[in-house]
Length: 82
Image (cartoon, rainbow, N blue to C red; front, side):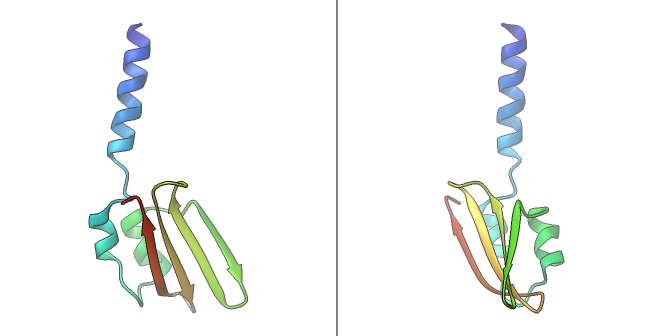
């Protein structure tokens, strides 16, 4: 029982430390590099490239921030569940 409570507490603490927040989203703007955005949000969970556009996503299916980059400069930003 005690172990279960400790595990639950750890999970809640980690969830509270998420960098996928409205405050952090407000710090992002067009023209920022992937390194600058990663300094705020941490490393992206996934990135993909199509032609000259790189798309990276931080978070999960319900709470995420997505950024598209062209020549390592953010050109579009979107978020959900912030």
